[in-house]
Length: 170
Image (tube, rainbow, N blue to C red; front, side, top):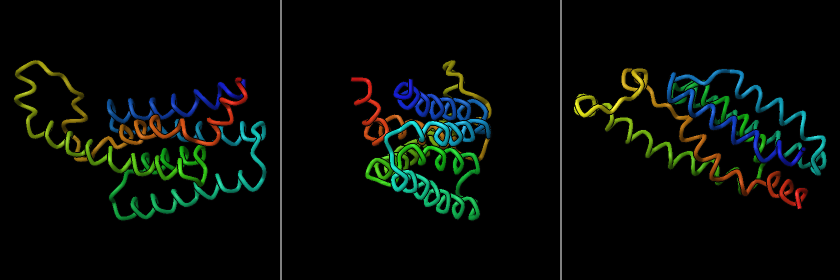
């Protein structure tokens, strides 16, 4: 049971956050809260020692600090900061976290360009019948949780928790 929770819960939360950000341009607080609390509830059943758990918490603190600074500068939304912080708990302080953050940056850049192009050509797209959420076209912000979710789905399989969960299934 533990292994299936580790394998399924974070990707489902990240996908839900991405979908709600796309449709509503906001990430409900319950998603990052559920992701963080579920990590804290499941980690005692993992094979992680206290030092490794502390590194997972340190990773979340580091990501939160950077995201808080970006939020204070009005560069990042609060929901994006919360989902990145909660997701970083599941990665820990290792190369998989670095992969997650790098993929988030690259995919976020591509997403930003795509959204700018969509908004610039909204009238043309509407005439051919392409329907996109009005919130996406009218807002002045980017639904960055799409990039965060996609990056999480790409990088999460290399997370030590996932690798350990796969070993438990065998």
